[in-house]
Picture 1 (cartoon, helix red, strand yellow):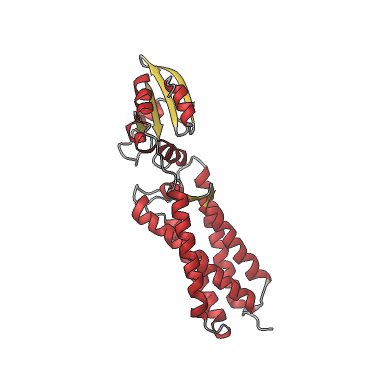
Picture 2 (cartoon, rainbow, N blue to C red):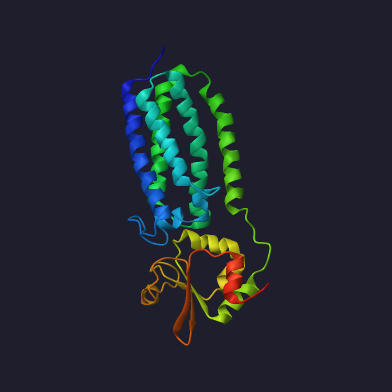
Length: 268
C-alpha cells in the first residue's frame, strides 16, 4: 500500500500542534474576561474578533471547531501513513479553509478589526494544505475536478454561517424600554470586547445605541475606564441604578427583555 513520507507527516504534525496552541488560547480569551496580548488597538485586536457575533456558530466558538480540526490533523498525521487517508485530509482541509476565509472577510467588512492569531491559524491551514497536496498529488488523478464540488460545498456552508450569525433580526422596537431604563436611572457599563455586550446589542436591536452607556475599555469608542474603576466594575455588562449619586442596585451579565422590563418597572 502506498504511504506518505514521514517527513511530510511530521511537518504536518508540527503545524497542527502550533494550530492547537493558538486555538486553545483563542478559546480561553473568548470566555475569559481578560485582555489578550494581541489586543493592540481597535483595528488590531484578537479580543474584538473573538467576542464578536461572528466568533460563534450555533453557540459554539469558532476556535473550538478549530481545535477539532487541528486535533484531527495531528492524530491522523502521527498514527496513519496510508495515502488514501491523507487524500481525505487534503479534501477536508480544502473544505474547512473556505469558511475560514469567509471569517476573514467578516473581519474586514463587518468587525473592522484584525485578529493576528486567527489569521495565523489560517496560514497554518494553508501550509498544511500545500504540504498535503505535495504528498498526494502524484497519486491522485483529476485532483482539480475533485476539489471543485468541495469548494462549492464550503461556499454553501459559509452562506449558512452568515445567516446563522446575523439572522436574528429584532422585529420589535425596544426604544420605549430603553428610554424607560434611562429615565429610571440605569447606567449600562460595557466593553467593546465583551461578547455578552454584543449579545445584548443583538437582543435590543437599534434601541441598544440609545442606552445611557459607559465604555469601560480604554481603546473603545469614548472609553471611560476611570469611571468604571471608580464604580468597581469587575465584569461587563454591568447595570447600575443610582439615586442622588448613591448606588441602589447592581445587575451583572446579559439580561433578557423580561429582566430589563422588570428593571425599568415597565409592563410592556
